Length: 141
Image (cartoon, rainbow, N blue to C red):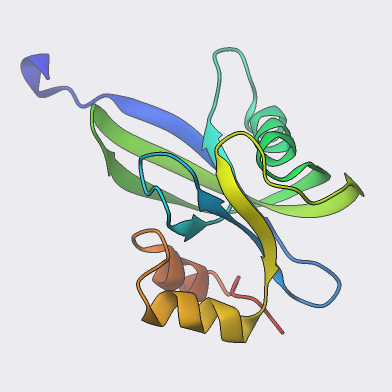
């Protein structure tokens, strides 16, 4: 980058648990992380607020309508052209039917045992498990 300036790409994610404590996750259909499981989310479009972007991304990737709650945390991840700055928000489902769409190969409610299996078999996006553990946002069931 010219002058050592790193391009920052603002992204959002939605950390969503159902009434059983399962975590809403998607299997990524495209790079980065194609084939890996993560929480739904993506880039903030020009002019969008974080809550609008979170709601749009969850609707596009999972078919669900959500209400947006508090900021759970933020992480930085390397991108091909800079750094992804990802702001993750707690969400609650208020409508829709779960189905994969847009950038998701699969969308599912993941329980703690399944999450553990995905972690042990290296099928989670880089840094997801320790980050969710630090934030106390792992599946609860």
